[in-house]
Amino acid sequence: PGCLKSAQGSSGLCKAHGGGIRCREDGCTRAAQGGARSCVAHGGGKRCDVENCSKLAQGGTLYCVAHGGGKRCQREGCSKLSQGNTPYCVKHGGGKRCLHEDCSRPAAGNTKHCKTHGGGKRCQQEGCKNSSQCNTGYCISHGGGKRCQHEGCAKPAASYTDFCLAHGGGKRCKVEGCNKCERGGTNLCIAHGGGKRCRFEGCTKITQGGTQHCKAHGGGRRCQREGCKTAAQGSTPFCVLHGGGQRCRVEGCSKLAQGAGRCISHGGGRRCLSEGCLSAAQGSTLFCLLHGGGKRCQLVGCTRAAIGGTLYCKGHGGGRRCQNEHCSKSAAGGTGFCKAHGGGRPCGREECEADAVAGWKFCAIHGGGKRCRVEGCMKLGLGVKELCIAHGGGKRCEFEGCTTASQGNTSFCLVHGGGRRCRLEGCTRSAIGSLGFCKGHGGGKRCAHEGCTKSAASGTPCCKAHGGGKRCEREGCSRPSVAGSQVCVEHGGRKCCQIEGCDILAAGNQKFCKVHKVVQRCKRRTCVSPVKAGTQYCTAHAEGMSTNQEVPIPCEAAVCNA
Image (cartoon, rainbow, N blue to C red; front, side, top):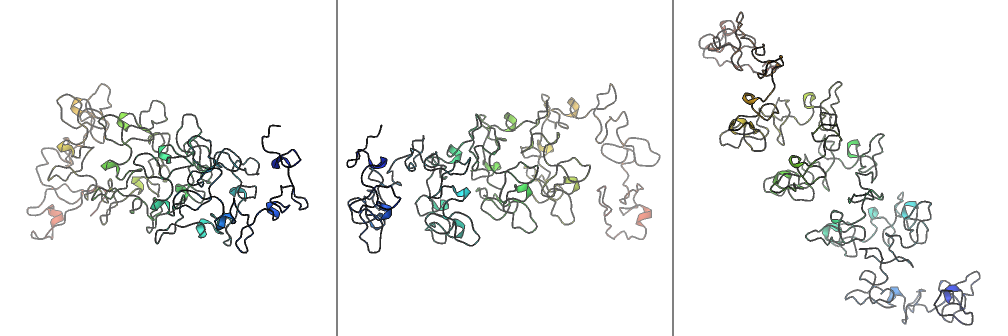
């Protein structure tokens, strides 16, 4: 009941339901083919006329598919077999197609969907929904399909070869000198233009998962978390943020694994080949970003790393930009805005308005980021050493004998020319803020008081004259506190003159009061005696030195004895 196929012979049943003549081979219940009273598997039906070929002849021809028999694809230059009742092969649109929305793959077996969307036979392993391979009844992960013949290799064999991709199996890219696998029947690898490309205007990336678009433009599987449109990772149904992808096997670490089952922080992925460097290699290069790896900014003269899928660094317009009108700053975190316009993730601590450290839930003040490994130090740990700047972390100045931290993207400290410099011609001071000028020429934050052009003090919006900066802690006193002190000058915040017996306050940032500062003092450290005429030292320290002899000037740094 319900079958509309033709009945065979006097049985009243179609072939699929047992009608017609059956194979005479003992134990075989298949239908006999042709006049040979045997099924195809046991020699029945017409055979290919090519010598030593025992395959079945196709259609009204005398040959099997391999030797040109059967209907051929009508696409110019294509000699593959046409599928079903269509005049084209599978690659050119012939045969049944998957009914899943936006999927153009062929339907598998007698189902209405492709293998990716549930069609075809499934793996017999309990709980596994993957497609079974060949006639094994299992998916590749559970041992199905052909295996690589290379000694000790258990990977699946590629295409119709006896080896996996790593050991030379599958078809190779036809570009001379390229050993990568070809994609999508194009005879080219992805790098040389093979495979299907994203249909989004201007995009040349490869399509994902039977869709017409790349991951960035909505192709491939999506995260199943409600409201999330990010691409799912690996064989998991979720994106990285929601737990998808393989995780680091180090106990207590939940980061994404990058080769060998470990995250980059715990040694996973490829390492930089520069001597002594433990950082991860970037992209398809052999070096980290610091040693020239990864994509570089294409602006002439710029050697910084290109950001995201763009061709430029952040400073030259690369990466995602703030969506606020007239703003050209970089978008922060997973938001569409810069930090100034509300972008980035806020600190998880209640009432804290600071931004969380990348990859952490809190800002640096409330525990975000890696901490210095030195016992008792709570400052941020930098670089692979995980030490703060004070304990030797981060990059160091390359000037011979200098151990100070280098500034910005330069290789030197501020004293030896590192960091950004003031843009004003002839000025060599350090630039403050985004304007590119030093404080003296308008750089840094300015006082918010109307008509005032002085620099804002200590993280406050105003200069000291208009209430900015730290204030004296004495009750009832609103004067500014002296640098390095918690009280103002009136309450003992400034140092006294270093001349023995003088109780007058030192003038400005000097070591002496106004009365004693006019006298030139001995350059020898801790000595405040007047210099001997014609020298830079007092009488006691200049004894035995010629007035014509060049006298070395001691270093002014507090920790230096040179």
